[in-house]
Amino acid sequence: MLSPGGVTRGRQLLPLRLWPRRSWGDGSIMASMQTTGRRVEVWFPKRLQKELLALQNDPPPGMTLNEKSVQNSITQWIVDMEGAPGTLYEGEKFQLLFKFSSRYPFDSPQVMFTGENIPVHPHVYSNGHICLSILTEDWSPALSVQSVCLSIISMLSSCKEKRRPPDNSFYVRTCNKNPKKTKWWYHGKHDNCSWEG
Image 1 (cartoon, rainbow, N blue to C red):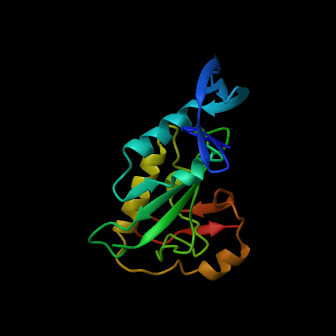
Image 2 (cartoon, helix red, strand yellow):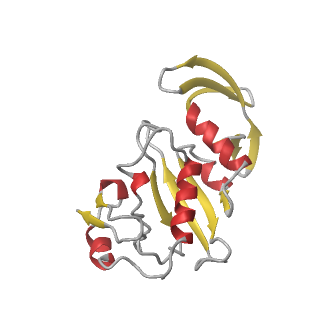
Image 3 (cartoon, rainbow, N blue to C red):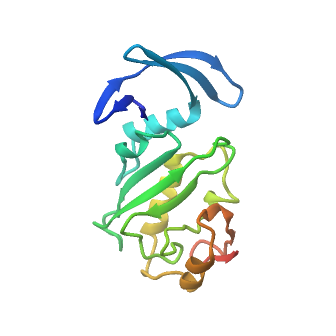
């Protein structure tokens, strides 16, 4: 199993040594890795590696990368989040799931709340889907995991009343599992979101 710092065998983390082999125009690199005498070739998206290190070394306030989540794949992360002090969510703990396609950063990551505690918020459905424009139509390759995290912190922190979207039950019953497949309509910063299945 692959992790940023090495390869796991059972519960033991073995050191990982990389030898760059070839750089590609899409920001990926082909690298060889060697673990205990065995050499394997793997793809490492350069941008994703850079953002992973940034999140590990300088996470937004109240957020930490769940290190176990990246042990098997660099393309799926869980970020542990704590509600900001002085907000309706103070002291509450949440988890965000980030999934990256091979087109990242040109394609936005799939981002949703996961786990047992999904925040009760007008833009967060009980299945964890988030109605936030930067996750779909306002996405830009200039944005990053950190900017998404900061936007979600801001969204929760500005909430004045804990409530679900009015169409929560119907949406959760009928939506696609991937929130990026939903056609969202945005009605300003504080209004509810609408969607089309």
